[in-house]
Every structure is written in C-alpha cells, then in structure tokens.
Length: 305
Image 1 (cartoon, rainbow, N blue to C red):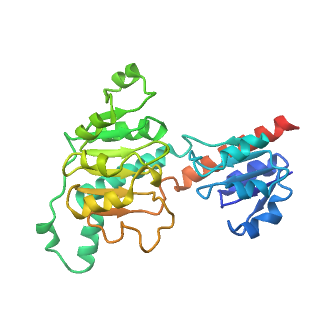
Image 2: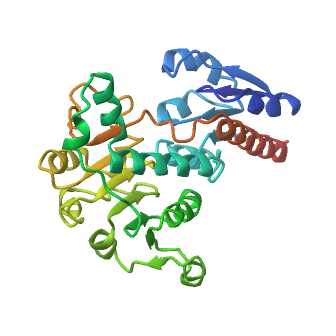
Image 3: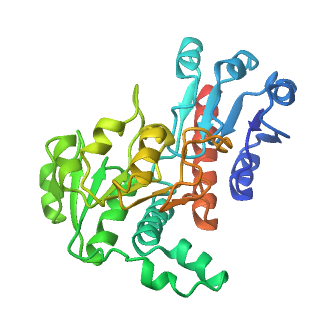
C-alpha cells in the first residue's frame, strides 16, 4: 500500500506509516502533473494547507482515505470524496497548544508594537518610544469566536494576563464556561461590541465572519487576531479599517490566498503583524500532528483490509 505525502510532514509521522507496512511517497510539489503518477496507485494521501481538490481526487482511482495534517478541511473536495466513499480524517487539537501560544504572541506583538519597535531600533530610531503608545491588556476583554481546542488553551493564557474572556459559540456549554470564569456572548454583535481583542477560532462558512459591516461594529481601537483561516476575514475591509485608524491593529497568521499576492490590499497596512501560517509549526506540534494523522490513516486502511 502507498500513501502520497502531498506536503512535507514530520519524520515521526512517516515512521508510523512505515511501521504499518505503508510506503510513504513524498510528492515533489503540489503541481497536478507531479502528483498524477503518484496518485494513480495510492490508497491514501496526507495533505496540509494545500488541501485536495476535485481534480486530484479524479487522479486517484484507488484512493480510500485523505488525511489532513491539521484541523482545516475547507480546501478538501468533500463532495468528491463522499461520492466515491473515500474517508476523510483530520487532527483537530493536535497543534492547539502551539497555535494558542502563537495567538498570544500576535496579540502581544500588536498591543506593544514589538515588530515596529524592533525595526525602529535597527534603524537607529530611538524616538519610536515617544511616538508609539502601546495597549495594556490587563483588565481588557478577549473575545473568542469559536470554542474549540485552540480557544480552550488560549483563554486561560489571557486570564493569566488579567483579561476577561467572552466566547461566542453555538456549541459551547454554559456550565463549562461558567466553571472556567468565562462569559458567553449570545450573538456576534454582542461579541463585537465588547471585545477589546477579537480572536478567531473557527471554520469558515459560505462567507467571511468579518466583513465591512462587522468590522465597523467592533470597538474603536480593538485588536483583531486570526490564527484560524484567512477566509474568515474580508481583507479589503480590514485594510480600510487599519488605514483609517478604526482599529488599533491586527495580527494575522492566515490569509485568504497563501502565499499572498503582491497586490493584496493588506500590503503596507499600518499596525499589522503578519506571519506565514506558522502557528502550528513548532517541532512539538509538527511531531504530534504528523503522528496523529498517520495513525488515523492507518486505522482507516486497516478497517478496509
């Protein structure tokens, strides 16, 4: 049996596959021309943020399972998999600790202007300290859109800084939130109206969660953090708000198109901290996630035997 590794994963995950008697074929790129000869006989694939489009499914006549290295399945051709009875497995929670730590880092970086301060110091501009006024987070409200593995880790980190936490989620248990000293928002509008820092932790639906209308309802001088999916934010509307000084700033680890195009509306925006989708790329998280997705792929193939 063969499993095509569409994008690189940690060696620990490859070892799980090999121990189960599955040959791991490393794709040279995500170009369909490179993938086609590998997919023609593959029983399984493991992919990351590239996803697995319908064209790739069509090139995989023996495919039995698609494994997603991470929680996001929005770039997987799920209808095409369902039509052929191909299993889809993912690894929600495997990288939650690392992503939550990155969300904390982005929040602090924006609030205290750390990247801009570093750039100023390297340029000999010590006067930056008189021009930039940072935001003290203690006593402010962290609003969490979504209550999954990352939110559950991030919330106590914010509480340790002295922040209040407010959650908007359709499935969060009120008793569980109360036990954690966390408040529950009954609507997105309530979350937007009360969050000094808004952090996104959910999967995209038909459209962005934050468009121009929603951003206009956020608190003046609020911070936006997104470590979930770029599709959750209408980037042109965010760029307009940042340039107008409507928001204090934003920290984004994910964008709607990755890598971003040169003409992205976010180019040159003030008080914007960008990182290249690295929230879950610590050594520990990559090892855990690779092992978990490999185990789930092995489990599906084992049931199919």
